[in-house]
Amino acid sequence: MTRRSRILTTLLLVVVAAVGALGIALSHNSACGTAPPLAGGVPTMKAAVYRCYGSPDVVRIETVAKPVPRDHQLLIRVHAASLNALDWHLMRGEPYLIRPAMTGMGAPQDVSLGADFAGTVESVGKLVTRFKPGDEVFGGASGTLAEYIVVGEGAALAIKPANLSFDQAAAVPVAALTALHALRRANLQPGQTVLVNGAAGGVGTFAVQIARAMGAEVTAVTSTANLDLVRSLGAHEAIDYTRQDFTREAHRYDVIIDCGGGHSLTAVRRALAPTGIYVSVGEAGMGKWIEPFLGFVTQPVVGLFGKQHYTGLLVNNLDAEGLASMRELLASGQVRPVIDRRYPLEQTATGLRYLETGKVRGKLIVSLN
Ligand SMILES: NC(=O)c1ccc[n+]([C@@H]2O[C@H](COP(=O)([O-])OP(=O)(O)OC[C@H]3O[C@@H](n4cnc5c(N)ncnc54)[C@H](OP(=O)(O)O)[C@@H]3O)[C@@H](O)[C@H]2O)c1
Image (cartoon, rainbow, N blue to C red; front, side, top):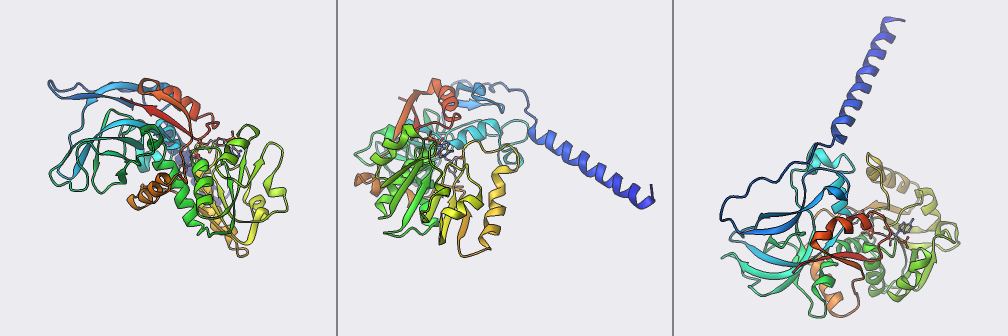
């Protein structure tokens, strides 16, 4: 072996060892910690927490300190929260790359769960002007699987439409805003054709209805059992993916909103009009490593060949403007949340188990007091 090949071999071994060590460090699950003791006399509440990464078995209901609002914050009594894919990603710490970037290596830094809610304002800080105690509100926040949360006045927060129950309102923020922003990213116009893949899920049920309200011609892709559901939400056409592959049909769509996955970009390309837009929201059973991020690289590359546009959507923060738009659609009855099952807070883990099956119709709700 020459000196040059010895150096290359050594370098290769170092790189392989470093990647292996990084992989082990990223995917390592520390043991579950115990709850820190509460100071005497501190007001308390019940909350769903996870003190280590893993299956829904790691989710516990604990007594924790009740949050105290600062001057610009509201204290809200949560009546309902919804379960989102985000919750199981956080719970499992997957894909692993979210650990160093967001949730913590080995074990979660923030042990709370839940990203949207509906509830009643209990008290407000002295700088809050838009809301008052007794207001019934809904919106996005972190740690909403709890009896109380604090939310800044400028957060994604709005008065609950009177025609919605707390459970219905809690179904809205994450899923509906994801659907709304996906359709806005596609610049959907009245009269255009849009196909929603994964139409029976949390995001899909909103996407079908919002697209219809925007004046589009909607085709919904789902399994046999959910065809009637998506038609009842306003889909003009419903495709049963167990019998028919939309990428093999003659029809070309102006917009494809993909919440279900299951097709390569080459296949999707066939179903998209020559100047069509494909927006990837997510797909069932995404991988643990880099698979969920690959689309952000491959989609722009595929878009270089021709006039079709491919993009991935990641809704990092819920926005007040988007929530206000959704509020109007809900209040006017153009959009209605679809609720599959409800759980008491104590059964949050059971709800997460069902969510992970990828078979939920609409949304799962955790109902509190
Ligand atoms: N980008 C973002 O910011 C963002 C935000 C929220 C969610 N997401 C992601 O978006 C995706 C959808 O979220 P979600 O809350 O709607 O999930 P969900 O409620 O769990 O979706 C479940 C639905 O997916 C459908 N489905 C499963 N396999 C399918 C397939 N092969 N083809 C078509 N439909 C299929 C199922 O309907 P059938 O039983 O009829 O197949 C079920 O109704 C997830 O991957 C989630 O992580 C992304």
